[in-house]
Image (cartoon, rainbow, N blue to C red):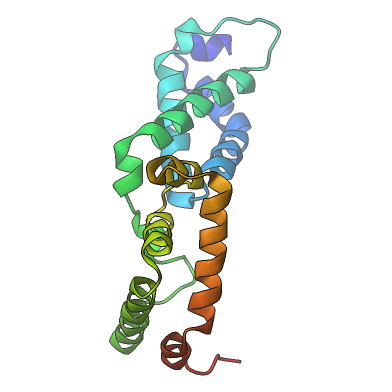
Amino acid sequence: MEGAQAGDSAAFAQLYSAYSDTVYRYVYCRVGSRATAEDLCSEVFVRAFARLHTFTWRGRDFGAWLVTIARNLVADHFASARFRLEVTTGEFLGSNESERSSEDITIESHRNSGLADAINRLPCRMRQITWLWALGTPTAHIAQQMRISPSTVRVHLYQARQRLAADPILTQIAGPTES
């Protein structure tokens, strides 16, 4: 630690080797995306390197200091507007996936438009709640926005799922399930 604080890059590399896996696992468990976890993990070490002179031993492991930096970065990540808009390339294609064919994309688009039509056939309040939920709005926010209780929101979502599962047009679009 003292060598790294004195500017020895090899000493900092040893700290990186010792703690990078711990920091990465901590971040990955919170963000759920490999690409984002890798970005945030590297940012943790960039910030740690820049602020290494501020670290003082207080009876806690250096890793605890790194995890504190990671925790703050994860919180900043989720608070940022960019998080809500960003989709990384790694999230489009997993490492073992291949690109989908245009036929598969067309079939999925047809199914999605059928689902949208089915949702639009739901009763007004149920439809509004279902669309808000599908857009990622938390149940508590939907309840507040609709001026109803969270349990009423959950009931509407349950009933919407039941109606959508029984919708004959959706059943026809979905076709036979693959075995």
